[in-house]
Length: 166
Image (cartoon, rainbow, N blue to C red; front, side):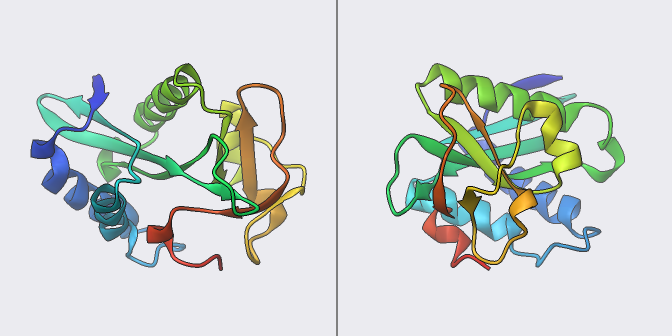
């Protein structure tokens, strides 16, 4: 498996992969694939990595800037992340997340946030203390990992392509 930055030739594959990966997910609204395109078009897709196996895109992860209390202060959001359905639970997603977090940290980012299942993302060091909020999202699902030790506090908003907080 090769993890590398996306290239223009990957855009269609990423779109199709994301659609396939999210179809069976009960929480999906079907907007994940167009969301990546909108992030790319707006310049907010800051890190976009693919996992390539046998010359084909098998996984993808996106990172985009977020604001906390209306300010972008070096924090980024993780997601969406997609892996081919038949290749899930084989470490591809983990490798993509770890590579993306490493790139963020090396670039001087303060940290990364996401909304998701704590049982999954705590493995990467994500945690929640209830001091970072995102709309009506359960505070336990609003998670962060800080690269410099400072926890984020305030109201989280993802890039404009994500739309308003739920």
